[in-house]
Amino acid sequence: MKKKINNFSKKITEEINLPAAHAMLYATGLKESDFKKAQIGIISNWYEGNPCNMHLNKLGKIVKNSIKKKKNLIGFQINTIGVSDGITMGTLGMRYSLPSRELIADSIETVIDSHHYDGVIAIPGCDKNIPGVMMALLRLNRPSIIVYGGSISSGFYNGKKLDIVSSFEALGKKNLCQISEKEYKNIIKKSCPGPGACGGMYTANTMASALEAMGMMLPYSSSSPSVSNNKKIECKVIPNYIQKLLENNIKPKDIVTKNSIENGIKLAMCLGGSTNLILHFLAIAKYADIPFYLKDFQKISNQIPLIGNLKPSGIFLMEDIHIHIGGIPVIIKYLLNEGILYGDCLTVTGKTLSENMKNIPNINFNQKIIYPLNNPIKKNAHIRILYGNISPKGSIAKITGKEGILFRGKAIVFDSEEQANLAILNKKIRPGSVIVIRYVGPIGGPGMPEMLKPTSYIMGSGLGKKIALITDGRFSGGSHGFVVGHITPEAQSGGLIAFIKNGDIITIDGKNNTITLEVKKEEIKKRKKGWIPPLLKIKRGYLYKYMKTVSSASEGCMTDQF
Image (tube, rainbow, N blue to C red; front, side, top):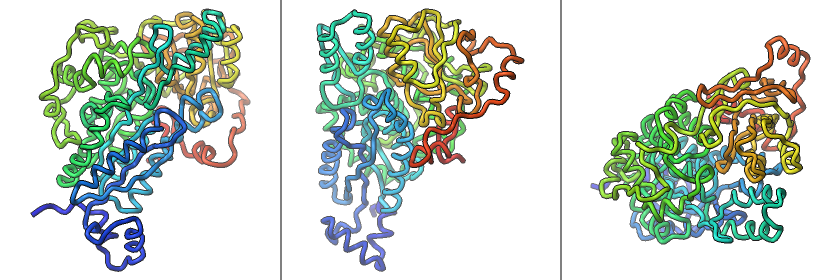
């Protein structure tokens, strides 16, 4: 006898005292024979406004058409929101990027739980889509699977591959007269050739790779390009897997364990992934009821070498992993064989990670994209958790070693990103400076906007090895250079970063994991005396609610603290 798999939807479809609900379901096209089928919410972050998400509705339709062929499943397409980091970057709109993660999670929880859907197939694209979806699936904890929208193809101009960061860095090069106005325009026009998430190991690809290693995606989902046949095939076969998950009652909390979380983080760190990984995995672990803290990230970082020669710090893109390596599973298999990853973790296939990798080919090191563990780019990972008087509750550094591991310089302080951007573009930053951008944290920002513009301008201006940047904001996965973010406590909450003055000496030590303001305690006490927090920048609406409820960066910037 087959197991019933409509355990949630039957509370509506098989309840005789809900005639209006049944009438509405008939209006959607359901037949009486459909009422005993399991109902699947096909969630996508589709919207036409950016390349990361513009194709997700098409992928959702492929999934739905495939579900129609299943005798015991019904699919309903549902959209939730997205915010384009690339479009909003450097504008006031960027304040909504990280908060959108919570809205995504809230909206998915709301529609799935209220309508009693039995399972979820989620199709995220841009950066905050993926953790937002994952947080919702853990809250709901019913059979679920994620299909990544896929990475964008590279642009091409003047003999060089391009991606989104190329357009940011081009402005710095134009200001230095290294490229002409015509070249500048051509780089912008050709950086993003079509649909898909930003192509380097930026936040979207970082999180997708991590969630595949964690077991919440089918093998190859994170590295199959957005417009590839592989992605279409994945969408066609995905109903087979959601049905298996329903039949065996395999839920996200069965898959997301301490070991599987470590698998995701280890893979992301090996590949040189985004610092946003920290914020998102703190929240994911919390919803999975797994104790996981900043110190755990540092422990992993100390153990894991950097082997991915991928943008922003390297030169290759996710499409190169697909074309020249054979996909993320090839790297996962290598790390499994080398004892880096745990192979006994359950995945959405119903099999363990090791079982999924059984027929995956071994990696060929006759390429420059992925290095062997015994000859890594860096002996330990690029993400460092820094403590010190500037960040007694922690901060996140992205130190690949290319810019060195120690920086000591004079502070030049800005109370907004806009001020810093103008100073960099107007060539007012001298080598040896530590740029301080403050009042851009979760509360002060609000929303902890990313500082991709200033870091890209720094790199484009040729200052990458000559200056550092620290902030209580965060960084895009596309940021690189000697940068430290997530400084906690933030300036708006009275953290020491609020009291730094121009000319103060700051030391960033990537070896001993410290960040220090070299000012005597007595002087710091004087500066703090009589300090009054600036007025909040927002007085109503969603961002106001976010400011009033959000936790610190060191706690994952969650709005439902528990």
